[in-house]
Length: 71
Image 1 (cartoon, one colour):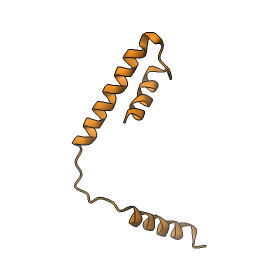
Image 2 (cartoon, helix red, strand yellow):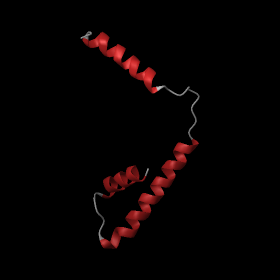
Image 3 (tube, one colour):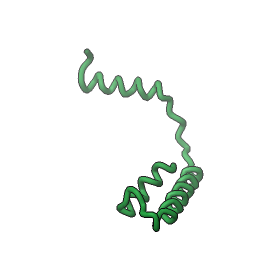
């Protein structure tokens, strides 16, 4: 979460590293955005069943075999 928030703040501010004068505001923004993002993810609900990685990989392999032919 922190890495995504940092990337967002860097993009919005146009700075990869804040100046000493803006360092505190930069860090606070990263912290707040990470917190709000976690709050959003925690409040989302889904009624779909969880996906199984092995089943999804098998489906992708089958699609690739149809698309590209089997080797």
